Amino acid sequence: MRARAARAWAAARQALARLRGGELTPGRAAGSVAVGVAVGCVPVFGAQSFIAAAIALALRLDAVVAVLATNVANPLTAPFVVWLELEVGSWLRTGRGLGVSLAEVRARPLATWAADAAVGALVVGSVLASLGALVAWALVARARDRRG
Image (cartoon, rainbow, N blue to C red; front, side, top):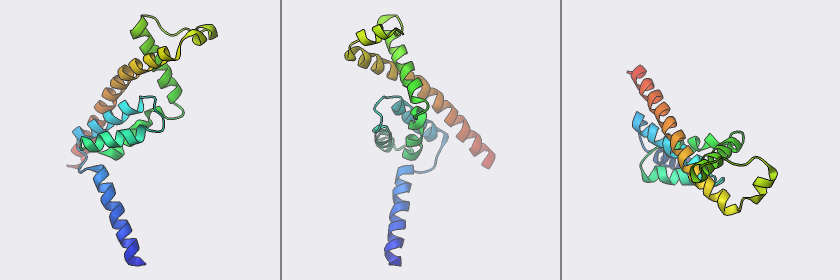
């Protein structure tokens, strides 16, 4: 029984090491956070963690950090992130923001909402991913400097 538990722990450690991908350098931290935040801004709730992990593994980044960074759109912030994406997408596509009346909201076809969300997610996700990457790079670089 102990041998089986030891093998299970060894397999778990090996899987975590593969997900982490090695030493967390400032560049790997920045890339991992950028991937996670960008994917976190895409309104495909429920699949974001899997998508971020797959991209991070393919790019040899830290999948754990990327998955954690997808939480930029958590239940408390997601309504604001989605609203910002829709607003930015509408403004970029039509030159004006979203209407605020119920009649205007009902008059918009679903395809228009989807197009605004797609454009907005691309822009908002890129901006937030860049900011997150910059912060992650600075924090990890500072931590490494303090260690030695």
